[in-house]
Image (tube, rainbow, N blue to C red):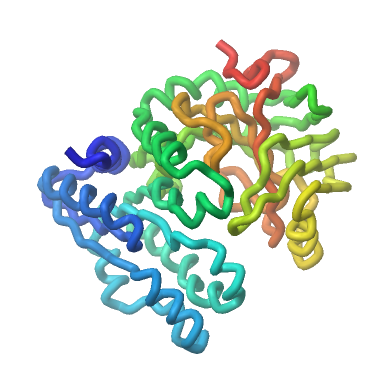
Length: 363
């Protein structure tokens, strides 16, 4: 029995609802090949037809380092045609060593320039997709961030096995509250005291299931493990200070002790104890309304644990983003700046009624 059997079955049967005779693309890098082969097997077991796409990491970095930008990031008509004929898509992301992204800079951007067009076509074709977070669990990443690799892998596998319907049940009360009008407040003993206005925009759940309704609104890619309730508040209503207790991962480096301050609906100050310059450079180069509140997330996954790269889905955590939110349902703010991080152990209330009490979902 493969250690990935439960994950593969969950993705094929529950996330994507793959049916007999459907066409499924499975895309992976070297480190994800053992996962991909189990996915391929489970696609066949479902009576469907798999097609495996493979990206060799050494060749990928060699191409970026030695070839001109004009020869990078090209997608052939044969791949577009394969996508047009596919019903399902499973992606095990890479590369495994993200520190090289910092070294290649603009050439890496050129190599990934097709992304917007890929996702546009995927939505248009109603391609049911799943992005497996287990693909981020690699030895080079664990080394960069100081993680215990086996512990990280075990946590992500366990969190990936949670049934999406369980997440939906856990999130119903949260989304009902987030979708109403009211004043949301976040407090924490670390000095966090922040509030913003909810204006009745629909709240959503990242439940790890792709439904017809999701496809109708262009939400065709599920993240596994899943587990977030999200909403876009009044972007100009933020007030107060948030002190994030979880650091931000940035291409193999940590940005620690991030603090943001809002006044009159705009972020007026931010700071960090480590690698603040990474935020500062993005801020200075960004265009558009970069100082507005982006969106809020409430974690719902009961098996996820904080301390890795999946803090946002941990049940009872709260994630706050500043800047761009145009890719979130209900968001319209377009800017080059984005800053988001998680807070654990917080209390979150809406008009005084708690939805999180000291880091635990309110009953």
